[in-house]
Image (tube, rainbow, N blue to C red):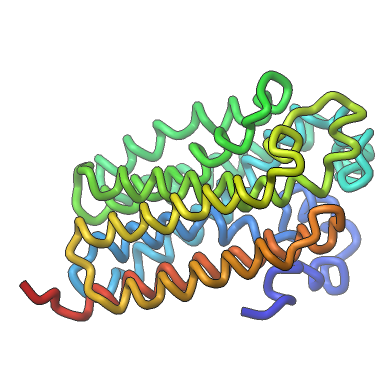
Length: 302
């Protein structure tokens, strides 16, 4: 998957100047997060489907990921606008810099939430209820960096919720399989967002904002490796419980090797290196999705 697809460079080069603050507020200039929110949804749809997943469902989850990730970023920026103004990486965000006023951001947030509701209402009733249940996590996440060194855990709880909604959208109810996948996705999110948080560790220390990057410190690589191992083991268990065929394990092994390479090569003191490793996790998401699809097409021998 191309670097340009995840860089959002086209926003700054092609969008009208008057649109750019709004697109940056919605993080259209940083689209990697859309995909990272989408992958657990797609994994669950593929895992729950007895063959090729329903492309309509996949499309709805892709649209929902774009809308709700944008809405979540606006909530985060509203809560953090004063902190963002003091952090090198975030000081030019539209709310922090004053390019967009708070009333405008709230109105935009309302439009996005309305669009998200429209998408959600296309699913079955059980999926609608499950999706609505995630809103509390979306609201509390921005405050967690003020009270705990584990805001990445709360991000994982919110970002991985799609694993539950995706399964329910296909099967109509919850069971142990999506719960295992959900826990695996949480571990994955903690891993990649810990690396992401290393970009801001100097500013976070100065301001007093907490993160797993600061909590793990020099032990970040082994501890992140542990979370990645939990992710791989959890995904493998979820596949086993659903009877997913052997191609899934082959592709999952490739994903595990890629995660190991990321950990070995990332320079935690180089923000650019941390960001590259963060974005590279979309390749992991694609591999796991492809594995679930291929595994569902191959009969499991007794």
